[in-house]
Each structure stands twice: as C-alpha cells, then as structure tokens.
Image (cartoon, rainbow, N blue to C red):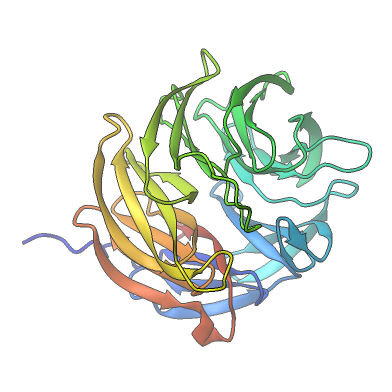
Length: 350
C-alpha cells in the first residue's frame, strides 16, 4: 500500500506570511489545521527557518504596498520562535532599508539579507550572525533593488536577482565582493543546484506598468557561474516570479497568468500554474493549476510536497510532487488576512 504524502508529518508546521495581515500564520503539516498566528509589523514579505537556532526570520520590507508601489521602505527583520509563536526580537538594519530576500548558511551561522539602494549606496546584501543576530558586514551588488537572494550549498557564492538592472549579481561570500554580472533582462526568483554548478533564474521580471513594449520571452535562465553566462533557457508560456528547487532535484516555477479584459491595461488574474522540471535533464515533468498570482514556493524536506503561496487569492496550494495532484488549499483570507507571501517549513523539534 502506497504511503500517503502526509504520513509522518505529525508535529511539522508550515509558516505562512500574510502581507496585509500583517501576520505569520502556522498550520499543522499533516492535517492543515490552523494552529495560530503571530502579529508582526507591516509589511512582512519573506520567511527563512534556521534549524540550528530554531528561529524564523521574517523580512519587514515596506510600510505598505510592494516593489515599485509602496508607502515607504522599512528597515527591520522580525525574529520569531515558531514553537511558542512569539516575536523574540526586532532586528533593525537601519540605515539599510527594503530588506527582502533571505538565504541561510547554517554551517557558518550566517544569514544573508538583500536590501535596496539609498542616496549614498547601491543595493546590496547584509550579512548577519545568526547567533548574535547582529550585522557582520555588507556586500554591494551594484544594482538599485536586489530582491531575491540565494547561495550555493558550499556557502561560497551568492546570487542576487535584480528587477530593474539587466543582470544577475554574482558575489563571492568569503571575500565579500561582487565578482560578476550575468546578462539577464530583469529577473525575479532563483534557485541554485545541489552541486552549485548552475543557478536557475526567472526572467524577465514582472512588469505591471502596462507598457506597450514587447517583453523578452519568459522562462528560466540557466546560469553557469564558471563562465558567468546564461547557457540554457527553459521556456514557459507566462511570466514567472517564484523558482524553487526541491531536495529531490525538481525545479518548481510559478507562472502568473492573465486574461484579456476590455479597457484594462493588464487584464485580470487567471488561475496560476505550477510548472515542474527536472533540474538535471531540464525536461518539463508536468504542471498543475494553482491560485491567483503565485508569489512564493517551498517544499517539504523530503521533496514530496510542494507549497505555492498565491498573493491575489491569498491561498496556499499543497501539491503532491510525485503525482502532481493538488491535495489541499489553505485559505488565508478565512483568517481575516490577505496577501499570502513568504513561507517556511518547520520540522518538529527533535
């Protein structure tokens, strides 16, 4: 008898950000039962779980709104205990502002946080000590708004995607310097292969200005860090924002879909699509329909379950990645919140 993808997840928790809640909500990973919420300052975006310190990091990016249309940039991170579901500290990165992307190096005890540019500095990445929760330094990315950030498994190379700049910033994490700019026509989410040999980057970026200019073809750009170049493109029908790589080598991409609407510049949102590729062969494995505007993707540690947070419908779709069957949908709006965004899978305490 085949084991259910939910078997053995008792005690595991899925944490989900609601941008406009503003909250972090917790759900039982086996039953989908809502366990409770933590109120956080506005406006939370991304989450990262540190298993060593057993803490959640949450970026507080803007006072309201989103990139290109916000009510001012915040400077803080919320540090949350997922077991007691309480804030243990608010870490202020001022004068840095607009913190968004998070990447964790557990071996070195470092957290990398992408921050936006200011009058006197380019965009960059702040390096934090996960034990003391204090900054150790800063790495410039030479772009105004590095939004997502990822590192290779060895903790030596980092990649910052830039919505506006026509390149991906590659940084040497040991020396703390920018080493390359890979030509990409504006970029969104990204993931790095388990061997560190390639980075997978969503491009072009989601331009919602209503511009009549024809955008570049949508897809996932495959970057070889040795040559600092794009060596392949996995085509998609629609613009992608989130990209995620599972522990089993499946590359997950969230496609944003719109339908034409008379008189509207952008049309209206249609159900999104989770597209699944094999990272090694780069072959498409299949797809499944999800909610409106997929914005963040994560997966269970065993790579069996995929979670897709959709910001417009404010839902989280739970997908069996072996059968590509949608198992359940968490409705964040039922909790009186909206804007599902960042997620983190929190395994039970050993």
